[in-house]
Structures are given as C-alpha cells and as structure tokens.
Image (cartoon, rainbow, N blue to C red; front, side, top):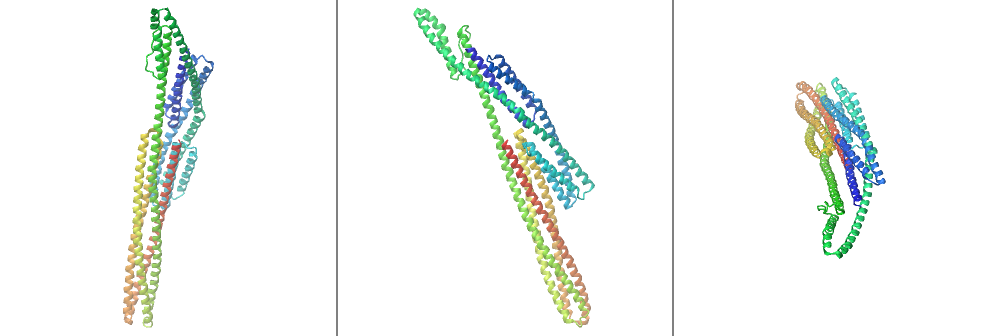
Length: 629
C-alpha cells in the first residue's frame, strides 16, 4: 500500500515538473515569436528534452496500462513538437535577416531623400519645391507604415505598406516630369532605387512574419497545448488515486491501531514484565509515528520521522512517511515557484500598461499644441491674403487715377498751344488736374497704411512660425524621452522606440517646413518694404504734380510769356504721372506676390495640420494594437 502511494506521489511530482516545463515552453515560444532570439529555441529544445525524459521515466515505472498509454502520448507529442523547432528557427532567421535589410535600406533611403529634398529646395522653383515636399511626405509615410507593421504585425499592415509604396513611386514619377537638372535627376533615381530595395526587404520580412505567425498558431501552439492537456489530465487522475490511497492508508492505520490495543490487553494479562517490553518495543514507536503523521497531515514538513533505522514493519512504515514528507516539501516549493513566476509576469504587464498610458498622454498633448498652432497659422495666412487683395485693389485705383492725371496733363500741354484763345478752358483743366492729384495723394496715403498693416501681419506670421519651431523642438524632446523609456523597458519597448524614431522624423520635417515658411515670410516683409517705398515715392510725385499745377494756375494771367512755361511744366507733369503709373504697377506686382506667398503659407499650415492628424492617428492605432496584444 505504502509502495503504491510512493509511486503515485513520484509520478505526480514528475507530472508537476512536466507541467512547469510546459508553461516554460509556452513562454519561450511566445518570446521567440516576438524577438526571434536564438536562445529561446535552445531553451525550448531543452524543455522538450526534459519533458521526453520525464515521460520515459513515467512509462518505465507505472504499472497501469492506461497511464502508460497516456505517458507514451506525452512522449510522442514532445518528440513530434521537437521536430518542428528547425522550421521555427529557420523562419526566425529569415525574419532577422530581412529586418536587418529593412534597417539598412531604410537608412539609405532616409539619407538619399534628405539630400534630394535639400538640393531641390535650393533651386528656388516653387513647383519643384512643392513636389519635393510631397515626395518627402510620401516616403516618410511609407516608412511609418512599415514600422507599424513590424511592431504590431497587423494583418492589414502589408496592404497599407504596399499602398504607401505606390504613392511614393507616384510622387517620384511626378517629380521626374518636372524640369530637373541632370544632378537632381540622378539623385531622384538614387532615391527610387533605395525605395525599391527597401520595399523588397519589407515584402520578404512580411512574408516570413506571416508564415511564422501561421506556423506558430496552427502548428506549434496546438501541439504545446496538447502536451499540457495530457499532462494535466494524467496529473488529475494521479492526484485522485493518491487521495484514495491516503484514505486507504489512514483506514489501515486505524485498524492496525485497534489490533495493537487489543494485543496490548492480552499482553498485559501475561505479565507486567512482558507488558513493559511490549510498551517499549511497539507502542512508543507507533505513538511517535502517529504524531509525526498527524503533524505531516497538518502541513508541517520540518519534522523528523522516527524508526527510520528499524528493519521491521515500523522501519518500512517510517520510510513511507519520509517519502510523504519529501513529496510535500517538493510540492510546496513548486507551488511557490509558480506563484513567483505569475507575479513577475503580472508586474511586467502592469509596467508595460503604465508606459503606454504615459506615452499616450505626452504625445497627445504635443499633437494638440501643433494642431492649434497650425490653425492659428492658417487664420493668419487668410488675413494676410485679404490684406494683399485690399492692397491690390487700392493699387488699381491709384493706377486709374495716375492714368487720368496723365491724360489731363497731356490735355493741358495741348491747350497751352492755344492759350490765347482758350485761357478759360486751360484754367478749368488745371483745376481738374489739381483735384485728381489730391485724390491720388489720398489714395497713396491709404495704400501706405495698408502696406504697414501687411508688414505687421507678416511679423505675426513670423512669430507663429517661431512658435511652431519651438513646438517641433518640444516634440523632438518628447520623442527622445519616449526612446529612453523604451530602452529602459528592454525588448518589450522596442515598438515604442520605433514609433518614437518616426515621431522625431516628423518633428524634423515640421522644423524644415517652418524654415520654408520663415523664408516666405521674410520675402513678404521685404516686398512690403519695397512697396511702401514705392508708394511713398508716388506721394512725393503727386505733391510735385500739385506744385506744378499751382504754378500753371499762377502763370495763366501771363498770357504769351507764360505759354512756353506752361508747356514745359506740362511735359514734366506728364513724365511725373508716367512715373506714378510705373510705381503703381510695381505695387500691383508686389501685392500679387504677397497674395501668392500667403497662399503658400496657407498650404503649409494645411499640410502641417494634416501631418499632425496623421501622427495622431498612427499613435492611436499603435497604442490600440499594444493594448490588444
């Protein structure tokens, strides 16, 4: 009875060990699925070998044909699972190699695209620069899609990556259709080649990842689950049999104790001496054994089992009780180890969740600031467009007034030749010319005020651009902090590091965009200054026209002698009004340039808002995928 119970306990202990090895095997497989580190496959092979050896031991020692068959299934499943490890290792090697190719080709693409965009910005051609920005955005979005797929293994990630690749190719094709220099064409070809290499690496890596995921879900995990199920089922049956054996042992001990008491009564009848001898040789060892078994049943394992050196039945009983004690110690140690492992896994999950929440709060605040700044920039650009339109309208009015003044002065010059006969008409024309000049002077002053407003609006845009640059720097710092936190988290934070790198790239792109806006704002300010000077020159010219017409009015009474003077002054007035017309034309051109610059600022602010929204969506998708994982 005690020997059978010892066999049950030994088998149960072995099955506990096998179940622990199975749990370890599941953890090692999951870690290898995420990291593809070779050490995990080595550990899986060791765990499977230990499971196989434990199964062989159980097969050799069990007397039950039913349990022997279960142990044989356990052994066969472990051997069969071991045969799948080379395939899993091969897929992991493919993923690591292709991922290394993705890293290298991604760096090449980033370097080449950065050089291309810098060269195209230096051309000063608006169409080329706008398309260069589109190419840069498309390439960045392609890389973000790839990182997202590698980090989350989203089933839709490959399709999104392919769509982003097609968009990047289309943007490069559109760029090549523009008027590029030979050097720019070569650099664009280099970028296209790097893009194609990166896409090939992504396709190969994604195929290996999908195949590895399928192999894990459809082949590896079901076999591990079968091993675990077989072990737990047999262990449950053994525990039930062990409990039955314990009950039978307790009943046997109870009956033995009753027999011993009866024998003790008979022995007492034989004599006191024999009673003392029996008491020393039998009752005391049994009492000690009973006390030891009672304490062991109460959960005490740090006890000494008496009579272990005896060669009779008490000795064999002591050996059986010692086996029970050792099994209890092993079971308690195994339960403590499993509890510690479960606690460690829970702490790790809590830490990952805490990092995700912290990252989400920081990046959401930064994106909200960038979006607000983009909205303010768009509003300022619209105001600047309205000011430019108003300036253009005023310039048109001034141009019409200047043309009218020119016609009037020419009329005065013609009338001067007939001054004797048409003195009254000359005086009326001179007065009309004076009124027109006063009106033109008023319009010039209004245009000067409008250009001053335009200059102040440009300064506000510059302040907004400076704010955006500061926000981009802050975003870069936040991304750096996220990278540091991800590095502290180790392998579990690798996905955070990927997204933080792309956030830094977006911050850098934002900084480059604000630099371009700053250049446009500086151009607006310079054009405003030039327009203001031209308008002031118009005002001075109009004052000269007023002086000339006053002289004409004063000399009308000097009939014959004043005729030549009037003709000369009229010629000078004609030239002055021509200068006014030219200055007004310059104001119109500058106001048109101001409107174009305002449109570019609006486009840049719209692009900034779009990019910030894209970053927000990507971060939300990434955090959702992390929580789902």
